[in-house]
Length: 252
Image (cartoon, rainbow, N blue to C red; front, top):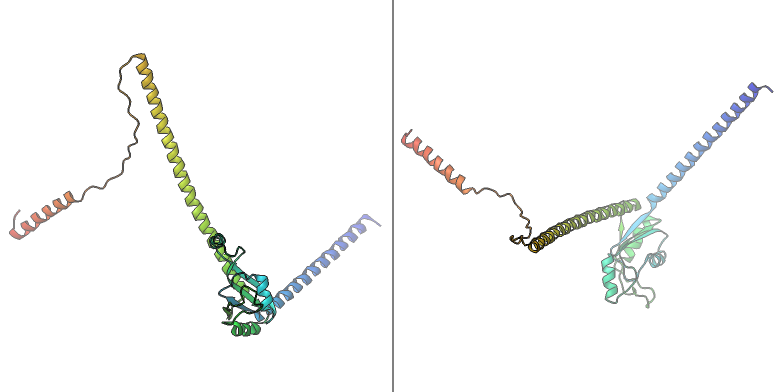
């Protein structure tokens, strides 16, 4: 075979492989689109319930064990309590584990979620009598037209605001620290000036020269003062009265 035929054969093979790659990419896109459509259809059927209060010692695992008796669950999110409250409770000798303030539970079927919320709200949690939340009551509500994406957006917004507050606090603390260090450096410079003046005075006394003792360097601060308004007001009143009298009595 000649070189031209070999080159043509290699080009045809490359074209064939490129077509296969494009075909595979198109099939993957179609499959991904179908999968996304299925997930969107499943998400529309799901329902979210809100728990305004989480009993002490309750965690996501225990909550899933209890609520899974009423329907199939997807995701659970419990908001951790404030770290300061956790530390205060530990110092007071209370529960040393992680506490939660509120939570969201996602059911596979929104009908089941709505029925579960209406059935459990205001009722006793129950279960084993030895459990710490046996006598606690359910505070659960079904959120109509609420999806899990709304919750993730809200959490992301809260995290962003918290980070922004931390950055502002850190910047304010940094400014205070820089101001304090600047004042410390200024005081050190003034004290070093005083020490040099005292040493110079001692040297002059040892040499027999009679000079007055140098005074410590003082920092004089000048603040801009606003001029009093009283003088200007009196001048204005005097001028106004003359003009008025001239207009009334016809004076020049």
